[in-house]
Length: 281
Image 1 (tube, rainbow, N blue to C red):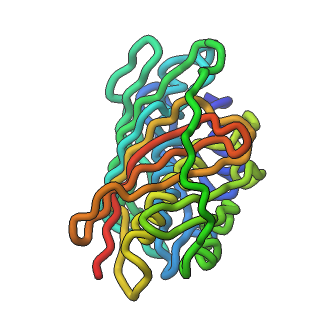
Image 2: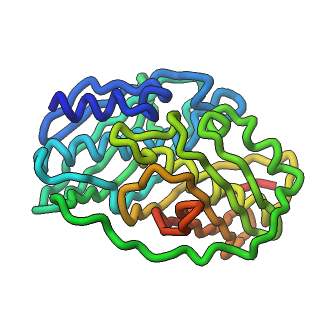
């Protein structure tokens, strides 16, 4: 348990968030994230990637405790995030509960809420223990069209506190497609040295949202992420990452966007997912 707590609280990414672990056993965990401007969108709204991160961390903490120390390395093979409300200038708490333990897989449900009980997100994760297996040989990302037009919004995205603290930059953001890059910096690192799953989540979430804005175009609109799905194909290495987003369908204010995350140099796939984004025009 002490080693898991060390991973939760001493991973550089978690330290930048300010995350702490209040409780952990083989069936449950409780994590607390105090409000920080550095984790926010404009208006002191907690960034969706940050809310998803504490869910993923809580799910993996419970899975590590349930599976045992000899079942690593671990990664969140799949997760579903439903965003229920915004946390505005508030501390948030993640309560993780084990649903089922298998030989290599754990299924964990996480409820994210404010201190006064307002629901923020509901998350379900499937965490895999690789039990010392060799690193997975993941497929290569096909990349995109190679264009580099950040549009009128792209240069301003890095000014959002949480995104800027990840070092995320927009290389392309027009015509319903987006391409964002993120360095393997200390602020994004796992305790083991690779890029933290939470930082991968933040990149995927942001890239999907930018693909929706690239389809809609800028304006004085209200926007949010109602839900997101993610598959981590393998634990991330210590490589810089690139993410490719594409809006595959628009239904009035709803945008369905696919995202691939890969190592920038090798194009080895790290994660893939979908972002359901809403822009009220």
